[in-house]
Length: 268
Ligand SMILES: Nc1ncnc2c1ncn2[C@@H]1O[C@H](COP(=O)(O)OP(=O)(O)O)[C@@H](O)[C@H]1O
Ligand SMILES: [Mg+2]
Image (cartoon, rainbow, N blue to C red):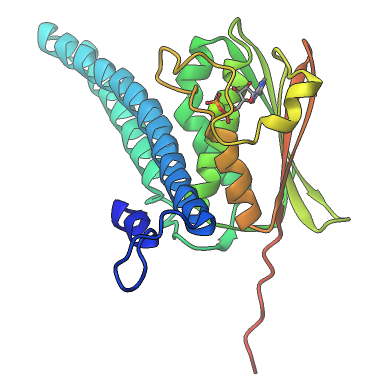
């Protein structure tokens, strides 16, 4: 959405401003919210990636220096191997973010949810290590879901960052993917064993701008209160569901449900 879109909503066709009409006002605010949500999601992705890239670059620089300093073949060989491994990781990260590797489209298409979760974890691998978070995965074989890969990746990223931020002293993050035959949907459960959410706060967490964080953390994430609002909207636009279960002091589990992709056979 652009500023122009908001502006045009506030004008009548004959060019007369229409700001006093509550319906127009609400529509304009909704567009602004969507814009802010997109910027936040992009910011979190950029924050994660910049950090990861810096780490990779430090490795490349340090091993290049080592190779230049030492003239023997064995050390140089090792330096080249480390540089190659780091650069390969960097290119995987770019592929993951841009959806290039998977050729992801900006529309609903049959999507491998497990692959999306793995890609997102790859982006957060070092961050999880840094905060001493052990990631446990129980991924059962599941059918493809109908999804817009890049947007679902933003949802997963937000849930994982929230979970990490709920465990400032480290802990466990349990991820589960399974098929639910009753609803014919694929479930992704993101469970942390962190601070939990008080009962009276639960109804508010999906509201735009609701946040209990004082601002972004040292890696620039969280604090806008737009993450879960975006998750809810994206999942609803996928005809899916999102629910939360939480116990104060014990942890929180978010469950995403996404409809299975049904491939229609060729017409004959
Ligand atoms: N895994 C979690 N554990 C505890 N609280 C959470 C968790 N996820 C979300 N919350 C609560 O919901 C609020 C809104 O989350 P979100 O929309 O992502 O915004 P933000 O992360 O910017 O605060 C958070 O500020 C926090 O209070
Ligand atoms: Mg968040």
